Image 1 (cartoon, rainbow, N blue to C red):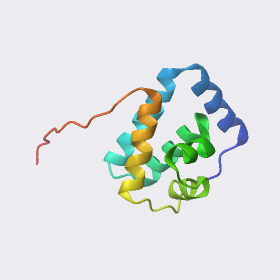
Image 2 (cartoon, helix red, strand yellow):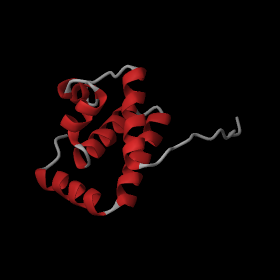
Image 3 (cartoon, rainbow, N blue to C red):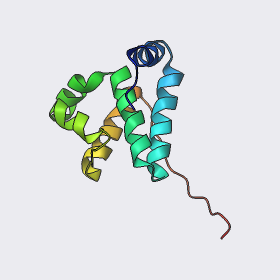
Length: 108
């Protein structure tokens, strides 16, 4: 489903003024990826990139093609782990945060 321009502008405006919102958006993307929900994780990463540094700047910083990064995080994208983790590591560094996963056991 395509997002309306006003939604994208709203997310971008909120991200510009609210660091906690940016971090929460990035956290939700990583939570989705760790929960094996690749489509939602990629969509949230795409929203985060669009609302923060943008694909052009990210591409320059990662020495990748902007189109390649956009395609990687698209609905049909199938990113290689190496590329996905490079993007995530860069976004964490740009935000000045690190995330970690914890192991918890659940009853069988």
